[in-house]
Length: 62
Image (spheres, rainbow, N blue to C red):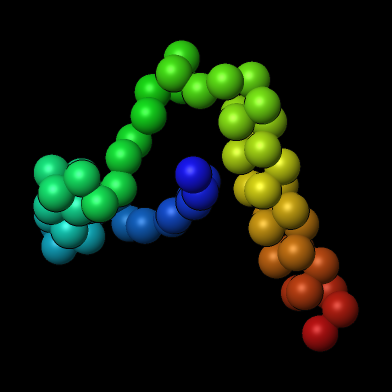
């Protein structure tokens, strides 16, 4: 299983429709927080934190 975080404009109707289609087709799933194990939640948090830190550092090191 892979955890992926995406960012998108919530007002963009085309993106929302694409996400709805992907969910309906079963290509992606959106598990509720209570369905995640403690380890899955920790891994998702660490991944997001690393990505955010990398973006922040790249602005200052470039």
